[in-house]
Length: 498
Ligand SMILES: O=P(O)(O)OP(=O)(O)OP(=O)(O)OC[C@H]1O[C@@H](n2cnc3c(O)ncnc32)[C@H](O)[C@@H]1O
Image (tube, rainbow, N blue to C red; front, side):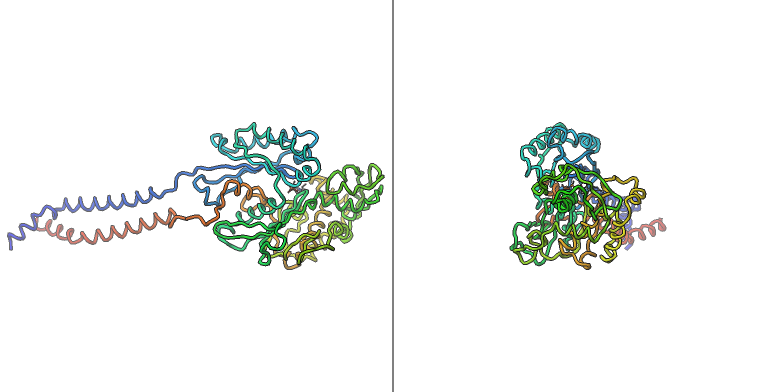
């Protein structure tokens, strides 16, 4: 017995030094395990990519810079607008008689873009220019002038180190569909496969309506249908763009309606009482939207005088819509098919600018109240309006009564929004810091950043890996300590014997 005990007590594995070494190795192994797990799964330091889109609209041009983490190209939900720049002066279509000035007008914003995008990224940053209704109208009216404007603009943009991908006119359908993509992408509705939001865009020369309807599969009026497969979901979008029904061209249509006989004075209910301005007939009719209606033998000028009456203004506006002809099951106006509006809508561009100015963005307010407020606003004297808003551009100020009335008429009479569906409209300028408009959707499409199928996501996020490995390591450590406890107690007994 005593010989056996001697043997046990002399075993080299049972000495206190050995046990301490085993414990230290165990602890080191566990710490190493956690460290490797943490470092292996740590996201790489963020590198960003950039994209630039120029929105060459009818009233002005704007530049947008987008940024996204480089390794997430195909995973989206992460593209953000980091900068925007408003080009000084009018839209590029206004430079038809001086095309090189169209190119020159863009340089200040392009220099800003050079400062905002890191220098080492310039060459790989795609730069796009998309032109909308202003250039659509110029192209219809004078295609060689439109080509020259594009030539000048392209030449100016090639001077910069960015990867210029070309300048082109977007179709109305593209403008509507990309606006819808932008809104739903920013709201994270596409990735999550949620019910989508319709898009209402009011520009200066055209207006777009786009939404998904359960009653529309594209078979009736296929030209209004756009199909997408995004993140594994199929969408059949209804979209239509009304050329000449943007805010500025709609004003021309309404004024043209009142000047058919070429009067010297126009008493206009859409302008405030006390407003009076001498305007040129040539300027009013200088657009393909109205040029064919120019009254014969009209004087050179007319006196545009306001009477400030919402009801009468709405009557004038209604006359620019044709509700009599429709070859489909249902139409909005001008014989254009439109299913009943469905779901929530985001209304942006001039919808927002105008309704925000008029303090009418709260759509939970009943439509009757909205109309009452607008009636009061339109009836306010021009002198009072200018005194209250002396910092607002006079052109905008003079037109808010018309523009507000036009918006309500377009929505309720044109698109058939009811009191109930009107309350589902949200007037928006930005979503999560990015402007609502077609530009983001356009860039996402051209850079293939929205995959057709849902992207594979790692089984666990980084924090998940770290937590699980840490918990496992702690458990292992406890098991290890418990398993060597008998050795420790024997070791302390041995120390007592010694
Ligand atoms: O899409 P298109 O039709 O080409 O037009 P655009 O791109 O120039 O159109 P915007 O959305 O930039 O502007 C829409 C309209 O809103 C006007 N607008 C811009 N800012 C405004 C403001 O603060 N108040 C009132 N109107 C404004 C502008 O003059 C246009 O008539």
